[in-house]
Length: 435
Image (tube, rainbow, N blue to C red; front, side):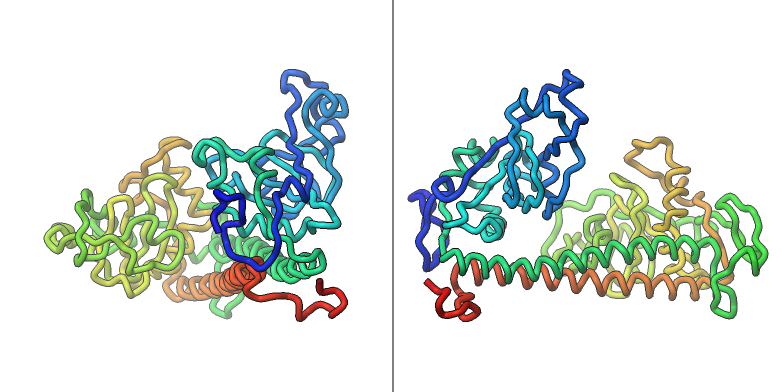
């Protein structure tokens, strides 16, 4: 179906109607910021960024009763679907379920379904599924934003309210599992941050126990209190040679189809390396940068943009090369590259990047500053023990993140099935409920 004809732009077995005929759409307003009396009262006031909370039980901003009366903000009872109306980022078209009484600014609409026709929770998932379509319906060729009039004209498939409710129930079950898994990830991150701080400042003794000042000797150092057995060294002193901390390829273009894979910041900082997606440089250019041919096991550091982002390279990158926006750090064999990786991305390591920066807004980090970074230096065996414990924390977090990602994939597939009618929830309903 084509939505130029006022129809839902995908096939489904149900009747449909425009949203304005089966729901109320309320767009808010903003009290004058020049009148202090309009603000910091008791009235919850939602801004467009709040839609990313997904389930809204409260919002951080308040206006006064006077601000409510002297603006276009309108209180709406729950439940309602909030949708971002403006913006070039992800906000425009993003939806959330509002479960408290509140008002909004002019960049958010609140939609309440007619309870006899449209289940509000079903509407949440229907509009979420149609995110790209809603953005394409925006006035001004997708640039100006959504409006009350545009939303009211959006056609909505209308199964029976009983089937709508069951569709929403099924999808909300998956949503709750995603939220619980995300909460577990956040908890793991908090625990991991604390443990990493302990591991990289107190270490693990020969018996496998975390040191404490009650049971072990410590000393002062440029990095704070550390075990008396540890040393402090500059990063450059831990590498094979002066050139073992170096820039990569200066001008990689033009890329070639069958060449040497080139690692860049976006390829190695945010997750597993997708080798088939890497840009490739000519063998001739690669031969000019033999010093940065990768072996696997090195540490790389971002030098532009957000400096100090760290990655540890797997063996699969052997023979690849490196872009100049990353620095290669290749420690000597007796020093654990995994220990070095964990320290550099830890709170202590990131403080060292900040300390060696020329300014808080610096967009570049030079090799001299990188070589001068202070690094704690346990003996090689303890480095390995700390790296193994840190790896285990990373693996636990990765396992939970993978479970969350699988749930998100499941939800996407279920939305495709249930919201198009490819798979019906009617077998889950009592026969008398099916209309």
